[in-house]
Image (cartoon, rainbow, N blue to C red; front, side, top):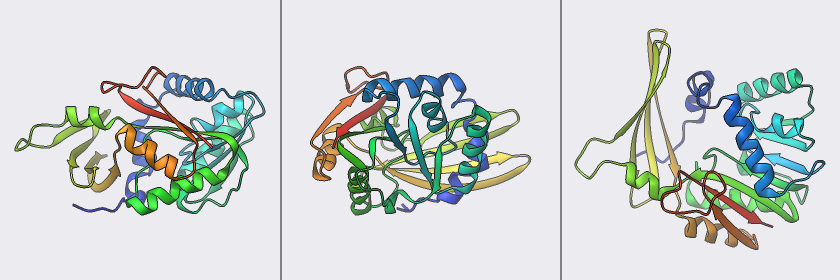
Length: 251
């Protein structure tokens, strides 16, 4: 299986098109509130959102009085983020950049890494990304990560010998399917994505590292964080049955 992530093929206009109904305004407001409450933020705090995507979290944080910087590698997403910020009348610093090469040093009170936006690279590079997150934070600053719950992923996969799991996304007459397998030796999900839109067919692949909570906790401690806590998707105590994993690490 390929270990590479096709960023250009995944994070494009098709992504925004098919995820539009999932990432709706109600969800975005709810997740923004969760980030604020779980981190204990107060207006005026500095927040780094990386990768920030099309600004669905960054712009809402700015509306609530935070000083926000968003970093993303995809120009289209940043264009959408800036347009939305202007429409909302908020000021967010948007930077085109790669999470592997952050240059911030003790600048932020908090860092948000949301919606399974970590684990795209090989393990050595993923560890260096966490070190970059740690450097970006002020002493005592907090990182919040929202990721797949590996145990739930495993429960939802078919037994060995059966066809891989397939997820269907529909938008009008168009559809997108994800064919997902988990490599037990590497801990990575491998997804083959097929997009059928306006009568044309396009395929791409991507791979994401999954983690148990003890594993990501130890990685974060190794990156220099002093304390790591785990929660479920709504901020409840984390369990095997949590839909998502939220991790909060203190610099």
